[in-house]
Image (cartoon, helix red, strand yellow):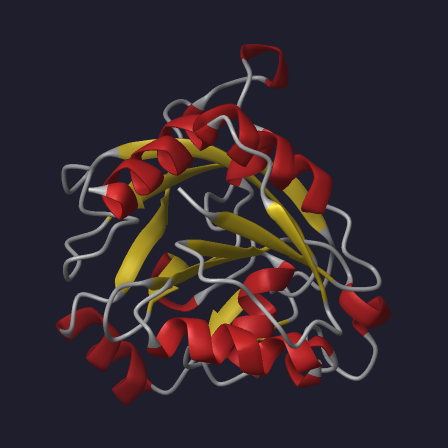
Length: 230
């Protein structure tokens, strides 16, 4: 299993993702600096969370114009898989690799909390096909611009094509709002047309050990990698 993690000025979840991937695969992922133009043949590239280029202009806008993005697009065109988490999701959207927009949270506040994700009925994808529809995963979010927005027609298209990976679901006995940012249709993650690119706001790399409060992130990443290898 050949994996890599991209690093931009302002990335702050790259180390956590590297540790998670090494824990699962037994191999340290390659680190891809944003100025890299030569990328080896890989199975999975992860674009981690953080505040790339300080979130100036728009979240992910500057990073989406970095040299590494051309290499990522070439990787995708060869059938390679890409996972974008939080700021990585924002970068994928800014690079036009996924549709829609991620705008400011509905309450205009940074939110950091546990969320419950429900696996949706998706097209074949290494990220979701290993789970039964309706499976729930408790994974935290930490963002200020995670409010997924798209036209009504685009949302209907994503629903119809099975490209919505997860939706936020209410946690049992928790009366607080279960949708942390106001995303349309409670969308927490979406897939590309071939199912091999996933953008998600929650951080699976933050729940890979019990002392972190759970291992659902480990479960998600491990299952995804198993299906990528398979």
